[in-house]
Image (tube, rainbow, N blue to C red; front, side, top):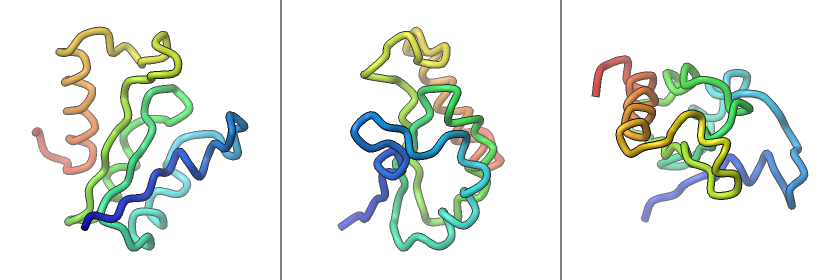
Length: 101
């Protein structure tokens, strides 16, 4: 069984934003202290910040990046085609591993 943590659930509740800004201020503590196998992270708006905090993801843990919004298609962060989506996903993976994927 894989255990995950949906970070969006902790930031937004019933459409009310409980926190704002990127993952940088919480990334190191979050990724290293949560006893889960993977994180579900929202990266479909400017509010999420850049991918730099993913460098704090420990080996053996995974991050699933939500890069396309289903609620607001206009806020897909420049992802307008499958190749743009792939490029954005590779950027996130590169930030997490410091290697080209």
